[in-house]
Image (tube, rainbow, N blue to C red; front, side):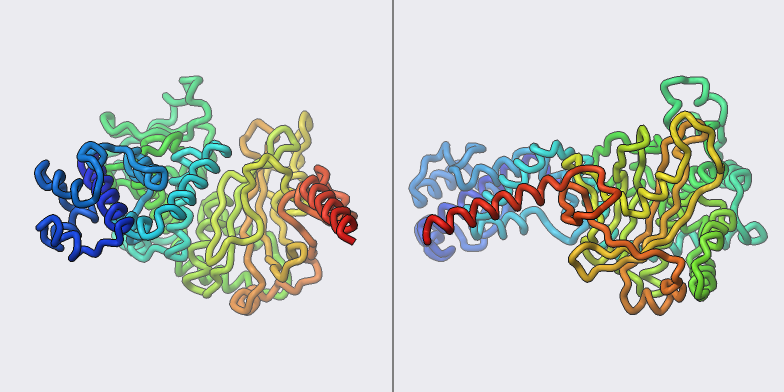
Length: 494
């Protein structure tokens, strides 16, 4: 976190560095002109020192500018974007320390080529405005990058949950029920659970839980499934066991005021997943299911009952265990939702090792209907008709991305979003077909698993005979028109 006083120092140092470089002065030359120590000048430029008025006058004279220019919070055209960055709270949005960076060090790098860097920053700001990217968008993206940095495996959290489970002794075996977790919350942390009061307040119908610090009470929505309850209770155990004070109190973060708040929410959720699904036990289950030469969707779904967890938690937990235990780190996770039977949206995504082909699109385009994530949701209940099944649907598919070498085994689980509505939600784990993956997933060559050529969105897809197309290939058509224009201009030169 950069304070206002630190911002003033950084801006002043930025100006001194820029002016010194414009005049091609070394530290030693400027030191000789001003009689200020080289080390002192270096500290000024790096935002560590702010000189008194008499020294500012000396610097202004040596650098050929007015005193007022040096102490103001404005600069020339090349510096202004950087000054704006420092002056606003945007610089505090960036979780520098979590990526091993320091703001002053980054600014020193920026000022080596200020005209190019500031143009780049200005471009990013304009893009964020055009697509209405918020602070929450930035925090969420930064968190996903943070997970990727550590291969989405955090040994300290695994150890904490393992230690907690072992401390339970006789109750440490098997899946936890919501009732057991509720007892643990009260016995260990004097926190009670209330399933009645939240349901009586209409405006809280879509909220799953809320923790009242003053009442030491976890309020739960009575519409939750047993697996959803278990996760929320385990997550509260995570907040308490990890002694996290900076935290959200609602289930879903509506607005993240800081990256640390979002990160702490993730840490408590990771603890919960690790507590409910011990890594060693899940690794053994994966070995057993993956060793079969035939795809067995029921075996994967059985893990939901084995651990009393939701499909999303299972897929998320696989992104922790597969890289660490089996070296399978070329993977992605997608959560998608359907609304009104036709609009599909990616509501969460994670990419490990690289940016994989399927990804969120903010241009309101139509995602490829050949994705297992969508085709399985389309098998769900039709609007206005009763459901044929109450349980989740599961499917597997080899997705070959158009005109690339990238092929993924996609395992998808889809289910209704709520007990009453017909809108669906799906979670997909995509595993790139590389050597570690092929060695583990023996069933990948099962003929029952269909292979389909897919793309990202219909608007950018050139596949001409696609029966599932939901929108015309607008970007392809535009590219063809531009190619025709170029050909026509070439004719003029002949």
